[in-house]
Amino acid sequence: MPAFGPDGSLEVRTAHHTNGPWGINMKRFFSVPPVIVACVLFAGSLTAARAADMVIDPTQAVAGYSHLELSQQWWQWAIAAPAATNPLFDATGADAGANNNGPVFFLAGNAGGLSVRTFDVPVGKPVFFPVINAFDAEVPNDSDCNIQCAFTYLDTYDIAGSVHLHATLDGKDLLLEYPSFRQRSTSFFSLDVPVDVPFGFPPPYEGTLDAITDGYWVALDGLSPGKHTLVFGGTSGSGFTVEVVDFMTAVPEVETYALMLAGLLVVG
Image 1 (tube, helix red, strand yellow):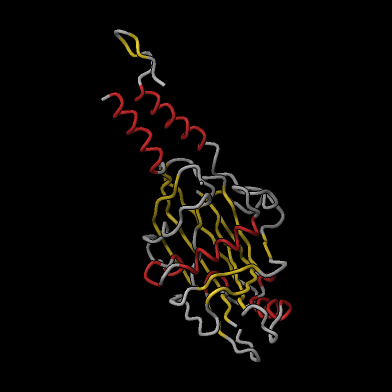
Image 2 (image 1 turned 120 degrees about the horizontal axis):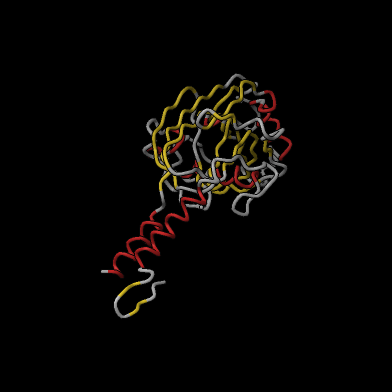
């Protein structure tokens, strides 16, 4: 039964042992040229984004998903990438955008220790990341380990006992506004594990597995344009420590630039 510890550590166990987001043409002038329309729309998107940088209530949906659902989607994102481009093993930020094209932009933790990364994020798109987290995966319908058994393994990481949890954006504490950011599974969710998964799952822990997760998560309502510094991490009750420093630049997505280019082409 393989399990990931906080932000990426892997344990592989046997069934019996525990190791743990118009122009109006008149004859001699353009009252609203398309290029201006494009620029106005572009500026409008930036104005909307300036209302960002805010923590989303953990009980509220993000892009139509609960925080627990996003935590499960995050694990699928994190486990799907091959080792060469896997975000958990990314030492620079070069792979932060790998397979990260959904309505929410996921940020990675790491497999322990300190990670310092530099990368771009889309302006205004919700951002979701783990302060510290863990999961356990089991073979479906395995009589040797039902969900109670899976929780027993998961709880060896003692997420509930985590200490020194912290998350700041540009020096602002993100963990003050709400009483709890913890998301814990109440039932199995399906996790597709590729054969070439970089974490070393042995057979039969491949294909679609049953998984559960526990952790502390933060969702931000997008980032305003420009540079930001995000620092987060902590230590689980079992002693696993993670620290991440992300130097991020929030930039418009390709679609926004395409809109501006379309306006320029029309004028041309």
